[in-house]
Structures are given as C-alpha cells and as structure tokens.
Image (tube, rainbow, N blue to C red; front, side, top):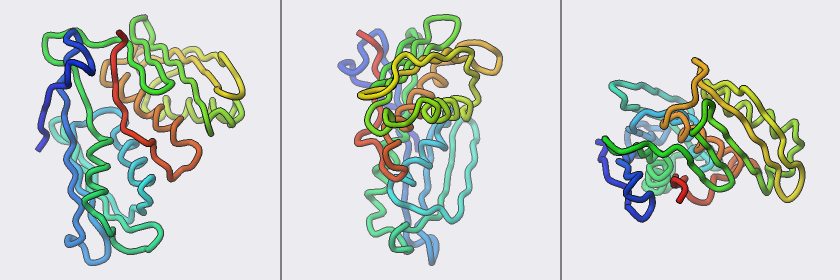
Length: 229
C-alpha cells in the first residue's frame, strides 16, 4: 500500500513542504515457472511507465509479458521478466525491487501550501512561472556528443511523448562540454504544465540526458526535486 510521508524540511523548506508517495515493488521467482514477476503499485503520474521501462532496461531485464492498469489514481503494473544475459530468472529479486521503488517515488505539495514553480535536477531547469513552461536542458557527457539535430529529436520526442506541445525552441549553446536547449512547453489546451506534469517531464528529461551514453545504463542516483532557494 502507498505510504505518504512528508519530505524533510532541509530538502524543500517549510514553504514547499511535500507529501511523498513511495511506490511498492515485489519481485517473485515463484509466481511463474519461467519468469520473474515484477509487481509494482504506485501513485499514477505522467511519465511513470517510461520511468519503470527505463529502470527495467537499465537493470538488464527482458520484458516477456506485461499488464498495466490504473484505478482511482493508483497504477498497478506487472511485468514478467528474464535476465537479459542469462535468459533465466533474476538472481537477486530484492535488489531489483529496491531499485524500482527508489526510482518510482513521487512527491506532491502538501494541502494548503503553495506549489513550487521552479524545479531543478542535474543540468535541467523547469520554470513554471510564466504563461508557458520554460524548460532549459544542458546535456553533458554522451548527450553533448550528439549532433544538434539528434539532440533535438531526442528531447522533442520526450516532450511530445508525454502529450505536451513545444511552442518555441532555441539552441543556446552547441558542442563540448555541453549542449544547451531552451523549450517553451504547453499542454494540449495551450496552458502551462501543472505541478505533476512539470515534475514528470523533469524526471523523464533527466533520465534521457543522463542515460544517453548507453541504453542500458541508468542514472547513478534517483531524481531529487528541490525548489530554488
């Protein structure tokens, strides 16, 4: 069951106190004779399926069957998987469950408190204070070695894949050590993104830019969202 817990004041400050919902994950080698079964229950939010897919891929798992559903804002996901390298069941189901839970954690503002409007994670900044949501992505490492057209395709695919529209885009800097892009993003109605949409986009862009050097390498640590000081 989802367990809400307040984020530490040191992380977000009293003005931006949050309630966090921690996803639960169980991995069983007994439910199926040929596959390990990954069972996830999490609060539903934009980008959740992509995050789960990225984690499973990064852990070297092959998905043989999947069943996903959402009811009353709670997502339930089951994946029948094998180890990509051995072709068999997982050797350490508990470690996989722990990593999935770590990456699927989601936080929302506590009732009665203002929602943060500016978010930063790594080299990505999402500013929700204007009529549009302004996203600045400074991709380094493997991402910076992509051509500008390749980077634009990857970033635009991430934004549009979540159902958002790019109204304006600009390449602020090209080449090593970093490639920097700015996007003005809106939802399907032409409005700036909601809190959950903005943080979901932030997380997906972070996964894209930090993991682009190899499709099977995950970011070294989970996303932590902090409002500006």
